[in-house]
Image 1 (cartoon, helix red, strand yellow):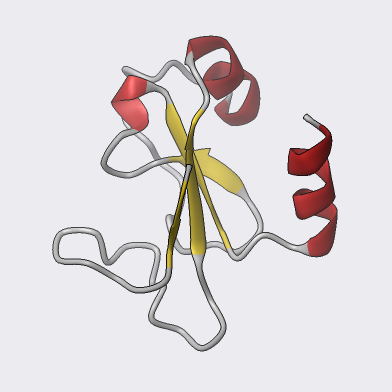
Image 2 (cartoon, one colour):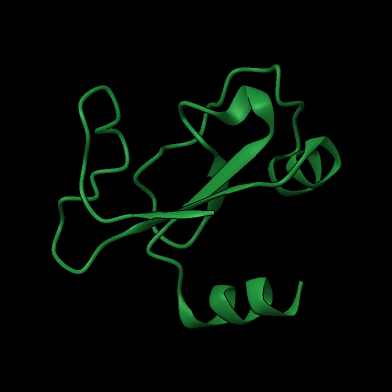
Length: 83
């Protein structure tokens, strides 16, 4: 699990450089990935990478089963802690 606090080259889609914004990245595995996104890791991500508080396929590592959430809200934080 990593927390990103700024945009990096070739990974600006999340627009993390906005004030008070960060992205949580984590490996979920295939089953959890499909459960959260509704599609296989091998399928291209179609979600807007900059939407706040929505679990999406990680733009760079989604094919390996990684997910991301930009600026998770309080309810989302509690849900991750309880998993």
